[in-house]
Amino acid sequence: MFEQQDCRGPYSEFKDHLQKFSKKKLFQLQDSADKAQMSMGMTFNVYHDNQGIEKILHLDLIPRIISGKEWEIIEKGLIQRITALNMFIGDLYHEQRILKEGIIPEELVLTSQDFLKPCVGLNPPKGIWCHITGSDIVRDKSGKFYVLEDNLRCPSGVSYLLENREIIKQAFPQLFSNIGVRPVSDYSNMLLAMLQNLSDKPNPTVVVLTPGIYNSAYFEHSYLAQQMGVELVTGQDLITQDNRVYMQTTKGLKQVDVIYRRIDDTFLDPNTFNPKSMLGVPGIFEAYKAGNVALANAPGTGVADDKAIYAYVPRIIKFYLGEEPILENVPTYLCSEKEDLEYVLENIEELVVKETNAAGGYGMMIGPKASKEEHAKFRKLVAAEPRKYIAQPTLSLSTVPTITEAGIAPRHVDLRPYILYGKEIKVLPGALTRVALVEGSLVVNSSQGGGSKDTWVLFD
Image (cartoon, rainbow, N blue to C red):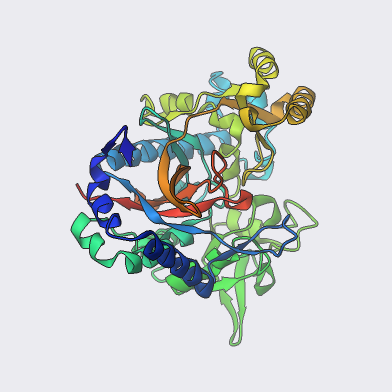
């Protein structure tokens, strides 16, 4: 919000409004927001927490505000990135030109657990692999945006973004029209239109496939199904016959044309992938290959989620589009490469080390914050299986004022915009700002105690 002592332009009107509130009034508003989240069922599950698994994703009342000019850079950069990644995934499962020309080491891709051999030769509807993406973006102390990672399998969090906006509008009703905040309420319509676009039928049947009520993101699955006006189903609600997928209803079987699946690739079909999966639908992959049902995101998309592949995205953009990346990557060391491995092992105290296939803040060590025991532990892990790890310098993440027990204080944030790839690529003009609620912490993941903020993108 501030640069030295000066308030940044996008925040000036909000700062004036905020100063009208007493500390007591602000705490009351924050308490009301917490209760609103709980009453709306905006909870998620933390599997490793024995204190009780139902949590709210704490919404801090002070929004993150981004100017229209800044957002234009983010939007153009994400459209460029998703275009290139979609071409990359298609190439990997067909000609593999990028591997044959040595742009990315062949072994790096083919040893990724998310490169799915059954998807080789697959042609998804309309040639689109990554229909829904949630990329994580960070900003350093100089004000420059960097992409921290791409989430192309089952990115979560958009329901919290939409509900956060409704709560914040009630807290600061007059501000929205005064400041000129872009709306995000059309997301569900955009999502449904994108899903319907995957079918050639005039009125296709769309469903949301959830692992069930015990999944950490079940609130989101049910919320999005409700907002789109489509059925929420589990694997037990679906069957396959003659390479077609049907939903069991009280009126008999009904053919399903498009599935927004919130189940990981390898659990989708026990006949093709993990034979022990109880979440998926036997035969669904064959129905998909036959072109009788569309899946979003396409199976196999997760290969571009691999954090080792992430390091090559600038080269991927250059290879397929002939352009320099608009949004740069955070500098990344690949532990699978000898020189990088040596550097990481020697400087592990200064680096953030991440497991290439982990998510949610797991499998990660922040060197400057970690103990000597953790440094030693990760040295052994990295040395034993270098392919499983990458490392990055510790960025000085930007901060946004946040309400704490002691009053308003700076807390580190990142940004997760949502991108839909239908007839064209659209970026929702808002994002889920995730905030590290613990003082000094850089870990914003909800599963690790992080919270969220509403993100205001201005029209100017």
